Length: 424
Ligand SMILES: *Cc1c(COP(=O)(O)O)cnc(C)c1O
Image 1 (cartoon, rainbow, N blue to C red):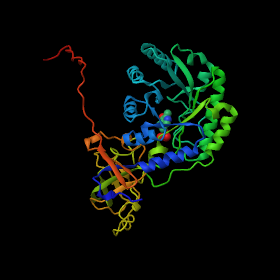
Image 2 (cartoon, rainbow, N blue to C red):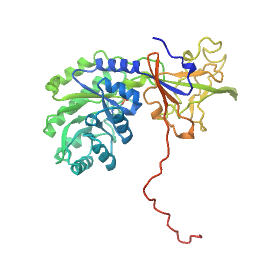
Image 3 (cartoon, rainbow, N blue to C red):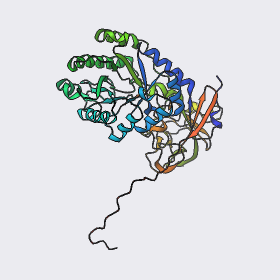
Image 4 (cartoon, rainbow, N blue to C red):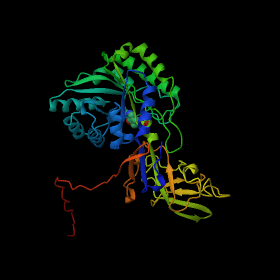
């Protein structure tokens, strides 16, 4: 397939390839048991072109804020199929979502059920909820545990099992099932299977305690993908059959859609579609170390975790024809590659081999289609946002730039009151 000329782009720029989104979606579909539904988690990347592509392929939208809901609806996801999640929700945000037609929420406390119930009553509608639960056991081998530990995500299984009435019986709500998102970024198929084993076990136990047959079983996801490193999407060749066997045992009706089994993914669907193209602006020496300053730093990428241990400036991604570009300069103990922000935290790497960049040359950071710009410190220091260029294979479809603007609020502000001893 013809490639677009990255060095000719106005930088900094994210480049998203829809052909790769379709390929990732196909790979994940093949890894999941059938029949099943798939939600795209907008937090990975809410770019409209990616949303449109995933919507066309049958994904539903999983959102957890007014902004994500807006993005999903603007991209044509039907409100009636949106799943609205999150560990706590403001009344006005839930009201607005219901007014826009959202009917399904993930909830995880008696208070959050009362909130949904009250708002459903105000609107004269019935709302459905998935009860998000926090299993007792952490998923083995997983760093960022969201389950089996104290967590804002989900009600502990024992809380639900011990007080089932606190989690059911609201006049305007229908409990449709469970939501068990337990971990993220798992690349090992066995870890995924263990996670789904725990999830299905919890669901079987709570079905009996809650005295209901679930319509929906949201087993979560956590499908891993490379981030800011070169690499391929992991494959899960035996996952579908192994999860199907687990479901056959505890939920034999699932093949007929009772319950409907659904999964969620952000990063697997969009990570490999995106690259960040950014230029070296400055090269100099300090205390014996080569310093390379790029036009992008934690304002454009890696804001969630910082970039500091991410050796993203990969020698094979710059022009290989130029002498001196294949690795660190001779005898160099690694260079300091940094972004343009006025904080020492804004560094790509302090010790990795950094190609011998000259000012003006581009670096290409692979696999940053998920948790790229939207997960970064874009407002810090006020540099321009990178462009976002959408391509399909070798064809450029559109190029946009996000803008943030300040809005004047209509509500009257409380005036400062005079303090005792005020000199004015
Ligand atoms: C973050 C999140 C996801 C997406 O996670 P990925 O690792 O990007 O797949 C899905 N579901 C929930 C509830 C999440 O919080």
